[in-house]
Length: 422
Ligand code: EPZ
Image 1 (cartoon, rainbow, N blue to C red):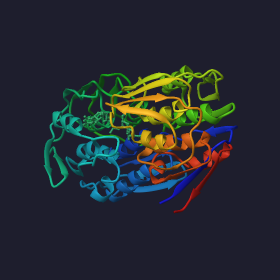
Image 2 (image 1 turned 90 degrees about the horizontal axis):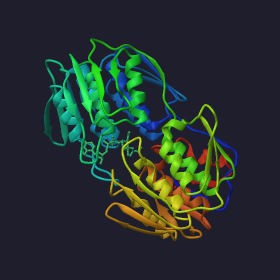
Image 3 (image 1 turned 45 degrees about the vertical axis):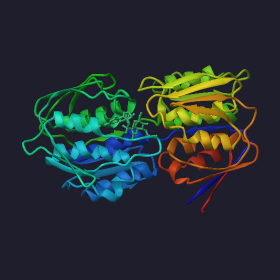
Image 4 (image 1 turned 180 degrees about the horizontal axis):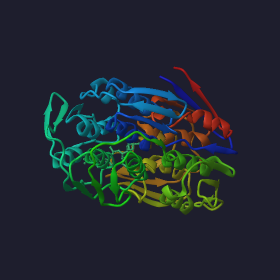
């Protein structure tokens, strides 16, 4: 398993290009199952999660060609059973469920496992698909959905105990595009990635309105056709590099991002004392480390509020920001594995009931640390940038799931990092 050595003390300078969004790419790749025509999707990041999705589509019978960030997919014939050994490795593969059900009238997908950030239930996905007329059976860890007479549009509310569900909204929205009649989803997720999927589906001939709000309406159509689409920028990668620039940078430029998708993240970085200046178009910004820094209070919540996927990275930044910060993760209360590792580096963090109280220290010191999930591993890389000594991060496969060539991008900015094949 690869390791990353991050030598602290380098100053980041220059510019970094933000990749296409992993979390927009995954449901959009799955949505190609809804048509037998060719689809071309550009700016798909080269990360292991999108590679898994391509493998799953291949195993379902799709023809897939990938060159650099462009993926060409043709789902002529579609199998109904998603392969357990691939599905179990990536929770997001659950989003093939809606498209296969709508296309074939039957789908078998293994129940996704939980992960370190928390129990990852799919009850809302199933509730929504049942509302469209699917019959649900669970056996041997597999979910089998059938709709022999096709799906029928319905009204539903997909709100869970922690609010909307992103992939649940995606699954139901995709299935509803080919249902007979009109579907309305109340308490829909409004993330930019859901909007990008809705735009992709509408270019295929779907009739979706309200994406980006809490109420999405889908008027079913007979058929969908092939399309070309470019995926939106990855707002979480962009936020991660914003935090890196605030921590260890000198006028770092971020290219190819989208200001409107990062309002809350930008506000948090600025509230802690740094400045972020966007250009007119909002697709480029300069991050300047502040002189007077201060702790902040943050609570994660569904978009457009502060994203849980940027909680760990902000915790790493605040670990050496003077003052006290309070970070509550209301979406994944267990998502604090990175704190134990940051404390090994000298951070002063107390975690209780889904809230971390961070008391900023002058400097962290390097220690061998272990990545536990995608965003926690990014937090450890950030912490290593200004820690005293060389931080060794093991289980690097976590970070490779969602960050495209992160070590190369950091090297381009002047960071002193090296990847070791362990
Ligand atoms: C998406 O996961 C993202 N993944 C996650 O990013 C992100 O953390 C999450 O949304 C929240 O924003 C992708 O888009 C591929 P949810 P998803 O359904 O859709 C509960 C990353 O780092 N819930 O919005 O699986 C759930 O337990 C990943 O890139 C139910 O109760 O998350 C959670 O508390 C990690 N029942 C809340 O809803 C359900 O049926 C939000 O989960 C589904 C979810």
